[in-house]
Image (cartoon, rainbow, N blue to C red):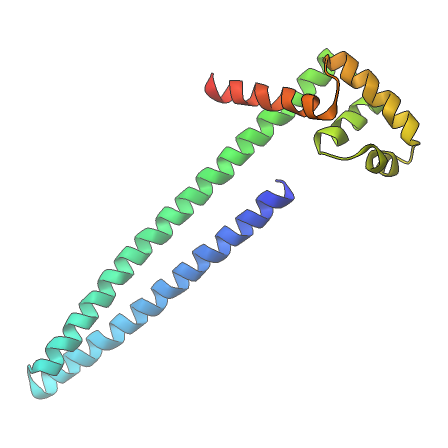
Amino acid sequence: MTRQALKFSKHSDRQTMAVAAIVVLQALGAIFFLADAMGDIFAIGFNMHIVIESIVSFALFAGVVFGAQAVNVMLAQARQRDEALAIASGALADLIRHRFAAWKLTKGEADVAMFALKGCTIAQIAELRGTAEGTVRAQLARVYAKANVTNQTAFVCLFFEDLLDIGNG
C-alpha cells in the first residue's frame, strides 16, 4: 500500500474505533439508566421521573443499535476501499510490467522509468540511483522514445489512460 493509502487507512481505523467507543459508552449508559429505572419501579412504582428515565434508556438503546450499524457500515466500506486499492495497485503494477517488457527497457531504463512514474525529477532520480544527471536524461530520452512520448507528463498519462480504460472495460 502507498504511504497515502496507509495514512487514509489509519485515519479510517481511528474513526471506526472512535465510533465503536462511543457505541460502547452509549450501551453502558443505557444499561445504567435501565437498571436505575427498574430499581426505582420496584422501590417506588411509576412516576414521571421513572417514565422519563425509561424513555432516555430506550433512546440510548436505539442509539446503540444505530451506532453499531454505523460501525458495521464503516468497516464494510473500509474493506471495500482496501480491496479496490489492492486491485488498482495490482492492475497498475501488471500494466507497468507489461509495458516495460513490451518496450524492452533495460534494467537501468526501467528503474529510471519507475522513478519518473513516481514523479521524481531528474536530479532526484540521479541522486537516488547514484548516477549523473546526464545519464538519467539519456535513459529517460530512450524510455520516452520507446514509449512514443516526449515528456514525463505524457509518460505518466499513458498508464492512467490505460487504467481508466481497464476500469471502463
